[in-house]
Image (tube, rainbow, N blue to C red; front, side, top):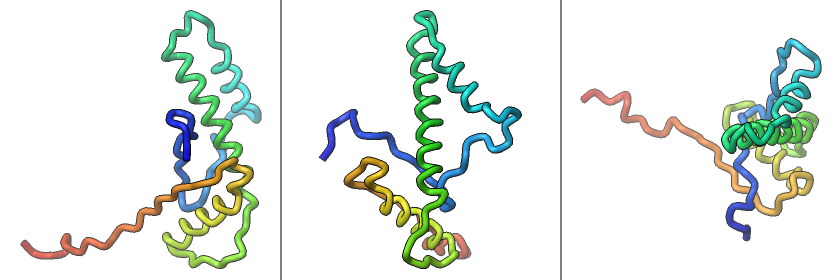
Length: 123
């Protein structure tokens, strides 16, 4: 059950989980500079500028939150080192941290291509 327009936005993860934002930053506190610049909107900023800034700051916050949750997370299950195994491991970690993320229900999508063998047929 959910309330329309109040559900959290989808969060896309790689098979490795979440990468820390801007690892090669030229300043140790680059993220705080970005946040400060984007929180400093004024009435003349316009609705699109406000929306952009709010979305960026929210994205940075979500990225940090997910990175902290998943970076030290381990599972009790051993997964293969295959592409699919890595994806399933991340899903298991997400499920294990559902309470910290404040969700009761998750929907996960794991792409697993390579089933169409028609590309090798001669026309």
